[in-house]
Length: 566
Image (cartoon, rainbow, N blue to C red; front, side):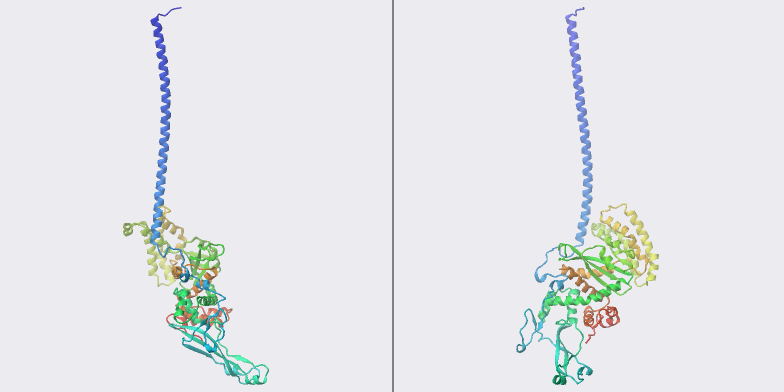
């Protein structure tokens, strides 16, 4: 064994210690390196997560910016379309004006007013009866004299003598004032039979049946009340005040009862107009909102609908209103049962569910309106430039309307030929432009909605090219809706479904009369005078009372006085 010197031993020990120290440092460096690697990986992962979060927030910001733009468009358009009061509060009392005020105020048990008589002949007035003082009104007497052969006694053939008179009173409205009209007919009895027989024959002179028996309401008075309410928008409570100022104390309940009774007669004319509309091959349809309070199973705030149907340009003018609780497709389907032909409509989807016998004709006024809405919310500088996509789209529509204005007085055949030559070119260019623009606009923007409306409705919009009688828009129906919408600002809502239906019938008759050039007051007066005296089951007799009948036109034209039957 070799023994190491002390110096060698210490040298070897120092080398071993150094080697061990280096190993420890190497191990420490490896641990540190691993820690740094882990930290670097964690930092990289955190950086990726942060980047992903930033990208997500950018997308959220872009979506919020887009949504804000859309909302601002809607807000600006809403401001642009402002009309009417926003308050939903309904005034209480006399200021409460209803669409079906007549039905809401109607009281079937309300007693008819009576004529006030002098104190020396006064009898005890039954409870609930109101007396109306007609002493200050001018009096007009209409006498019904019996023919000579009627005055012969049916028992003994002797000449009968007048033993009394029956008097039926009513208030007649003559433009500017009211007149107390007395319908007087003689009552005849046989004196020989009175002296020699057990019973005495009594004969009363015949006279026309009144539409409102046992009532002070004359045909002209009910016509006056209806026209003031449904044409001029004057509620019954105000009409009650008009009568009061004229010295006639008629309650709102009396007026309402008379309006409802009149609507029962007018329903026969409504049904005849409906049947006539179904026989035509071109019609228009539209609908608008109506609030009806007492609908079974529905909240009072729920919106119901008033559907409107009109005839086309080349047929007798017909304007019909129909109340329904919803916008469902079953309503036009039911109303138009039996109709086959073209139906002018807007873009409302339920019309596509109509039977195949009905071809939809779209409305270019609606297509143009979408672009007009976009223009209305653009900055003023963009509006003035007239070079935006919305302006270009509107210009295409305007070009079609310009062509139609030039063809207004042409025959349907001439219009058809001209459309193929001129309108077709505009349609082709417009279709090409639409297909380019739809790829470059945001679908949910107002411009995107305008473009997609024309694309989705293209088949219906181009239907007018098939027949020269068809119109380019549905303005005929929209014009029919307008009087109702204007009146709705006064009526606010209907009280009951039955009331809305009755009022829709009256509206149909007065608006159809106006479209046929008639004075609604004269026409209603004539109807109420004649309908009680005809066979209402005779369709031909009813047709002779329609607004375009020659006899009606000669007697009820606006600007002329109707000849009254006596």
